[in-house]
Length: 154
Image (cartoon, rainbow, N blue to C red; front, side, top):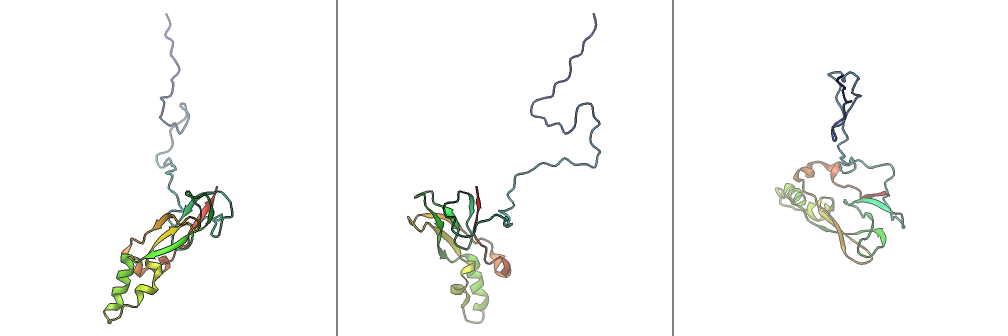
Protein backbone atom coordinates (compact mmCIF):
# COMPACT_ATOMS: atom_id res chain seq x y z
CA UNK A 1 0.00 0.00 0.00
CA UNK A 2 1.37 3.29 -1.11
CA UNK A 3 1.10 6.33 1.02
CA UNK A 4 -0.88 9.02 -0.68
CA UNK A 5 -0.59 12.57 0.43
CA UNK A 6 -3.47 14.92 0.26
CA UNK A 7 -2.80 18.40 -1.07
CA UNK A 8 -2.72 20.99 1.67
CA UNK A 9 -5.82 23.07 1.98
CA UNK A 10 -5.52 26.61 3.27
CA UNK A 11 -7.15 27.34 6.60
CA UNK A 12 -10.18 29.59 6.37
CA UNK A 13 -9.58 33.13 7.62
CA UNK A 14 -5.79 33.20 7.33
CA UNK A 15 -4.59 35.50 4.53
CA UNK A 16 -1.80 34.22 2.33
CA UNK A 17 0.47 36.94 1.03
CA UNK A 18 2.33 34.50 -1.23
CA UNK A 19 1.65 31.12 -2.84
CA UNK A 20 2.26 28.01 -0.73
CA UNK A 21 5.32 26.86 -2.76
CA UNK A 22 6.95 30.29 -3.07
CA UNK A 23 9.56 31.63 -0.72
CA UNK A 24 8.35 33.80 2.15
CA UNK A 25 8.78 37.57 1.79
CA UNK A 26 12.11 39.07 2.83
CA UNK A 27 12.42 39.99 6.51
CA UNK A 28 12.37 43.76 5.91
CA UNK A 29 9.17 43.74 3.82
CA UNK A 30 6.12 44.52 5.90
CA UNK A 31 2.64 43.57 4.79
CA UNK A 32 0.41 46.64 4.60
CA UNK A 33 -3.22 46.51 5.62
CA UNK A 34 -5.77 49.23 4.93
CA UNK A 35 -7.04 50.38 8.33
CA UNK A 36 -10.09 52.18 7.02
CA UNK A 37 -9.42 55.57 8.63
CA UNK A 38 -11.15 58.39 6.86
CA UNK A 39 -8.55 61.04 5.92
CA UNK A 40 -11.31 63.63 5.58
CA UNK A 41 -12.08 63.35 9.30
CA UNK A 42 -8.47 64.38 9.96
CA UNK A 43 -8.91 67.65 8.08
CA UNK A 44 -8.11 66.77 4.46
CA UNK A 45 -10.63 68.21 2.02
CA UNK A 46 -11.26 66.01 -1.03
CA UNK A 47 -11.16 67.45 -4.55
CA UNK A 48 -14.85 66.65 -5.21
CA UNK A 49 -16.14 68.28 -2.01
CA UNK A 50 -19.39 70.26 -2.19
CA UNK A 51 -19.45 73.52 -0.21
CA UNK A 52 -22.65 75.10 -1.53
CA UNK A 53 -26.29 74.02 -1.80
CA UNK A 54 -26.33 70.46 -3.22
CA UNK A 55 -29.54 71.19 -5.23
CA UNK A 56 -30.75 67.60 -5.13
CA UNK A 57 -27.35 65.91 -5.61
CA UNK A 58 -27.28 62.76 -3.44
CA UNK A 59 -24.69 63.11 -0.67
CA UNK A 60 -22.69 60.28 0.84
CA UNK A 61 -21.50 62.12 3.96
CA UNK A 62 -21.59 65.65 5.37
CA UNK A 63 -18.87 67.09 7.59
CA UNK A 64 -20.47 69.69 9.87
CA UNK A 65 -17.98 72.30 11.01
CA UNK A 66 -17.97 76.11 11.43
CA UNK A 67 -19.76 77.18 8.24
CA UNK A 68 -23.25 76.33 6.91
CA UNK A 69 -23.09 72.76 5.63
CA UNK A 70 -24.67 71.23 2.52
CA UNK A 71 -26.93 68.38 3.61
CA UNK A 72 -30.02 66.29 2.91
CA UNK A 73 -32.42 66.53 5.88
CA UNK A 74 -33.39 63.21 7.40
CA UNK A 75 -36.50 64.77 8.96
CA UNK A 76 -38.17 66.56 6.03
CA UNK A 77 -36.20 65.23 3.03
CA UNK A 78 -35.20 68.66 1.68
CA UNK A 79 -31.66 69.64 0.74
CA UNK A 80 -29.85 72.91 1.28
CA UNK A 81 -27.42 74.67 3.61
CA UNK A 82 -27.87 74.47 7.37
CA UNK A 83 -28.65 77.42 9.62
CA UNK A 84 -26.15 77.83 12.42
CA UNK A 85 -26.59 78.88 16.04
CA UNK A 86 -23.55 79.32 18.28
CA UNK A 87 -22.86 78.78 21.98
CA UNK A 88 -19.66 79.81 23.79
CA UNK A 89 -17.09 77.06 24.21
CA UNK A 90 -14.40 76.68 26.83
CA UNK A 91 -11.89 77.78 24.17
CA UNK A 92 -13.81 81.05 23.79
CA UNK A 93 -13.73 81.57 27.56
CA UNK A 94 -9.96 80.96 27.59
CA UNK A 95 -9.64 83.41 24.68
CA UNK A 96 -11.62 85.93 26.72
CA UNK A 97 -9.49 85.42 29.84
CA UNK A 98 -6.23 86.21 28.07
CA UNK A 99 -6.99 89.95 27.59
CA UNK A 100 -8.97 89.95 30.88
CA UNK A 101 -5.67 90.57 32.64
CA UNK A 102 -5.86 94.04 31.08
CA UNK A 103 -9.36 94.47 32.47
CA UNK A 104 -11.18 93.96 29.17
CA UNK A 105 -12.99 90.93 27.80
CA UNK A 106 -13.57 92.02 24.20
CA UNK A 107 -12.76 88.78 22.38
CA UNK A 108 -15.61 86.55 23.53
CA UNK A 109 -18.51 88.01 21.49
CA UNK A 110 -16.40 88.73 18.42
CA UNK A 111 -14.61 85.37 18.31
CA UNK A 112 -17.47 83.29 16.97
CA UNK A 113 -14.87 80.98 15.41
CA UNK A 114 -14.13 79.56 18.88
CA UNK A 115 -17.77 78.85 19.74
CA UNK A 116 -19.69 75.56 19.46
CA UNK A 117 -21.88 75.38 16.33
CA UNK A 118 -25.34 73.79 16.18
CA UNK A 119 -26.64 73.07 12.66
CA UNK A 120 -30.40 73.28 11.97
CA UNK A 121 -32.49 72.48 8.89
CA UNK A 122 -33.70 75.74 7.27
CA UNK A 123 -36.98 74.10 6.19
CA UNK A 124 -38.23 72.18 9.23
CA UNK A 125 -36.05 73.74 11.96
CA UNK A 126 -34.83 70.41 13.39
CA UNK A 127 -31.29 70.16 14.80
CA UNK A 128 -29.23 67.98 12.45
CA UNK A 129 -25.71 68.19 13.91
CA UNK A 130 -23.35 69.74 16.45
CA UNK A 131 -19.75 70.84 15.98
CA UNK A 132 -18.04 71.25 19.32
CA UNK A 133 -14.77 73.07 19.91
CA UNK A 134 -13.28 70.88 22.64
CA UNK A 135 -9.59 71.78 22.31
CA UNK A 136 -8.54 74.52 24.73
CA UNK A 137 -5.25 75.03 22.91
CA UNK A 138 -7.07 76.08 19.73
CA UNK A 139 -6.84 79.65 21.09
CA UNK A 140 -3.13 79.56 20.25
CA UNK A 141 -3.66 78.00 16.79
CA UNK A 142 -5.37 80.64 14.59
CA UNK A 143 -5.31 78.56 11.34
CA UNK A 144 -7.63 76.06 13.06
CA UNK A 145 -10.14 78.65 14.27
CA UNK A 146 -12.39 78.43 11.23
CA UNK A 147 -13.08 75.14 9.45
CA UNK A 148 -15.38 74.99 6.41
CA UNK A 149 -18.20 72.48 6.31
CA UNK A 150 -18.46 70.25 3.24
CA UNK A 151 -20.18 67.18 1.86
CA UNK A 152 -19.06 64.27 -0.31
CA UNK A 153 -21.23 63.33 -3.28
CA UNK A 154 -22.53 59.77 -3.46
